[in-house]
Length: 150
Image 1 (tube, helix red, strand yellow):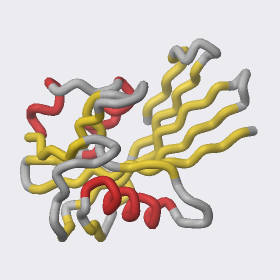
Image 2: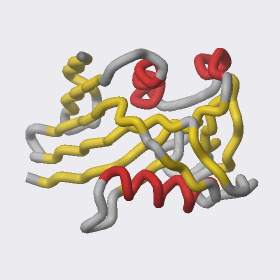
Image 3: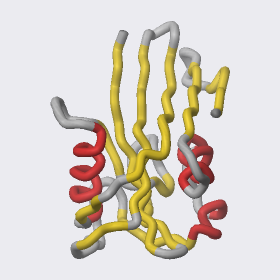
Image 4: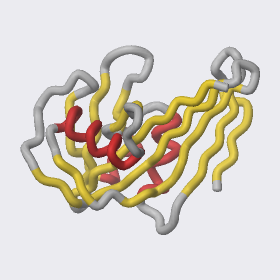
């Protein structure tokens, strides 16, 4: 079994959130800051590090919002993404990042900006009470074949 663990951190400032306008590789569109964990850091430590690297901001008091995972049963791959929300940050926002340029987007406009389905599916859960779990099964052609949201 091949496990990969990632983080994602939605940073909210009033009625805006910070997104990266990603224009490279297969993962294009707007995405909150985040990335792969480095061993042996915890998911929170990884999220804090990734936000700093991609935005220049120092985040604190991250609130766990849920898990998004996708599996490929045939390849025995499992990707787990820990999702966080914070409204507490400091530091100087950088203007350019290797992962995409940071931009503040009004929450009501998120439905109109380009982003991958996996990100768009999670957006509403960040602003609801409680936590979420989304489990997606992929086939060999990397197409979704089953989705369970709770």
